[in-house]
Image (cartoon, rainbow, N blue to C red; front, side, top):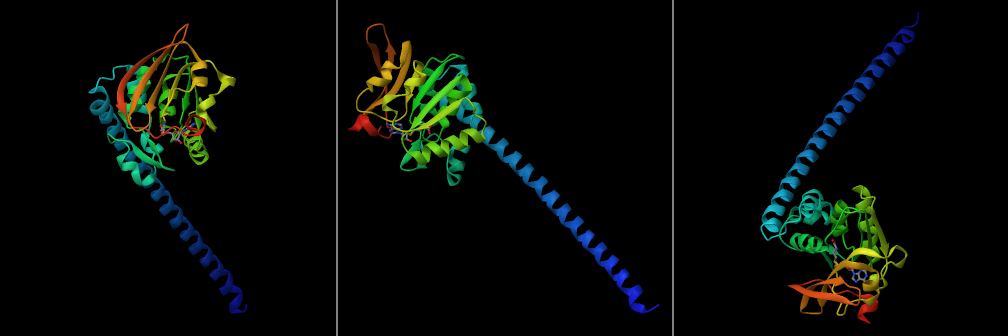
Length: 255
Ligand code: SAH
């Protein structure tokens, strides 16, 4: 028998074994690194959860927000998922943060404060004007049935839609466009929240509010006041709550 007939099959088997071993080792390394990554992710999420609990205690409860539904929602919504990557470490700080396109996500306390004044009940339907990052909408979605939210900057509307979908908020409907005229197809709403400051109360929104329903908005230009409106049989009641600083409401209301 020529020596090649013996040598080649042995070499082939040897190379195959080496190939298989290599594959096995690669698989093992991949498996271990996946496991490590998921345990790093779990630890990071735990860390954010701790920061969130502390945020609610120090910034929100301590300043007087008492509605348990609001506190539970604020402890649950992962605010760090709504801010740009490089700002995640500040997501639970006591301040608003930039979200791109010259817009901001509101300070956590203001989100909780405004939400509490909406007097929400489980079955409610709420309209938000100024989706921004989608964070306020997510907080609302933890408490009520359906959130309708409108954002005038398309890039932000699309990004918020993706974030909310990724986090499983199926009860939030995001629409790109000017919120001035509201969302008549889904009116009337139990409550309305405007998170950009108009210089006058948008009348179409008032019309889409249920009788006895609450609307909260920052009103004014340079000096703004958070205003609470309660719709009555004839007209509405208006109460000034506190001075605030929001980005201006653009579009038709500003024309
Ligand atoms: N609620 C947001 C923050 C809002 S910042 C959050 O939780 O992240 C205010 C937002 O209102 C901005 O994104 C701005 O683009 C949007 N906005 C301004 N005027 C608007 C209008 N007429 N209709 C809809 N959105 C508007």
